Image: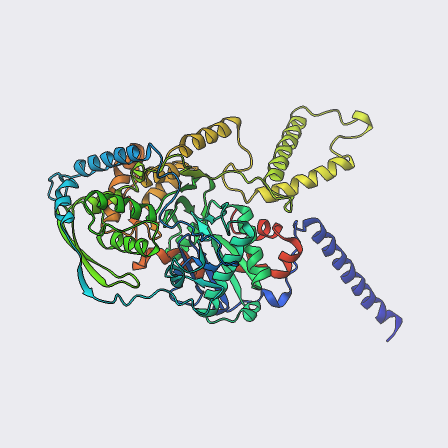
Length: 626
């Protein structure tokens, strides 16, 4: 090859080198806070049957592969054997809770019941007549004389066999551990949060160990995945919209580092509920066993200011129903809220008898079977009237629960920050403020320009090095703050004051579900969004699965919504069974849908990245504002 032929080739190589250098420089300028270190092969599309979707509820764990039609649902409870003989037995309460036995509790309960009876009387039946409340006295005489009839000398229900002294028992078996056995009973999640308390097993380390044991057991037994194979699987974890970030961080760390999943996506339950029901926008009400969360979701984004968490749910309705049927002379007089088997019975009675149907009125005779371990199977008869309607209506008049001195309503609040996450909300607020000051100064300079010869050179040229680094910091802060919705970064003093007033106003009292929905929608930024939310109210979770609940809630919202929207909203639609699916499974189903979306590929946090960067990965990859 001649010298003349070599020169053009050398020139081309030099141009390529220069282009590569330019690309490197550009990458250096635009580099995100946490550099992506995903190896190329991992970015390929993963098969959905290698993704496990976990929806951890307060009373029920729902878990399954993303390809499964339905998840496995098990009680989210564990019985752990005492480490030392003779230790006192500890049992986390199930239906009982704090704030029920205060001097004012009964008075509050009675006042709530008066409001419920007034509401029953004021709403007309479909034939136009008013429904006349039935008092408990009318059923009491009949129920007090009822005696159980023996159906079978054996109930055929047995206590869990612990003769081989297992270290732990999980799920339904844990509920049937004999109280005389040496086992502590733990519910790791209470009201949507990790259940930290001062008793045995109440530390963060102990509760996380319980969660790891329950989830690992479910994965091995029901999904038939050996734990050593989890390195080939990824996980989608559903978390409440209002969550404790420290707890979410601990859960992610447990799934990636302890259990060994190769990657994880964390997403909010309400957004997943819209995915599962096939809706783009909705006001989502998730009525769980112990909490009710409300928030407005628009195009896959949960509006932060619209989030509310109410500290009551289906279990509170069960306990309220027990109080009401006791007033009516409940014939099973030995029933105790402290007994797990009696709690199971009361849950079953609530689900069988309770309703929100205004046309069902008067006294009716019912029967139920009692099957406790080591006891005969017996049949009870009882007569009930309005108790079946009054208990579910307590969700709209929460004073009926009789809970005193407890924080009943939580709103979204700013995070306190994390020492491992330097670019948190406090940083964004600071950089946004500096950016606004910088923009204001620039505008002033344009309005009142300085002479070009000032200090010997133009002000617009060659800023000081400190200014240059400052402007780079502004860009970094701005790129992060772009993903914040509404006025989350910058709030005027008036907005801050009104938000604080709202928090103090609502946290002191329990809002009914209908009022919580109206407040949540009212917090949306624009009238157009509010109209969307009134047009599509999605109810998920198992706490409002009563006959007639859809029409009842629709009637309440129509009567209470602002007149200005009543004129412009064509139809207030309440959806309680989207696609005829079980509302308890909707959020889990949405997690399975999320696993199949192409956009999810950008959300995975991999084990190696978590090991290196920790909680900062959640700020980079979470599909919601972290």
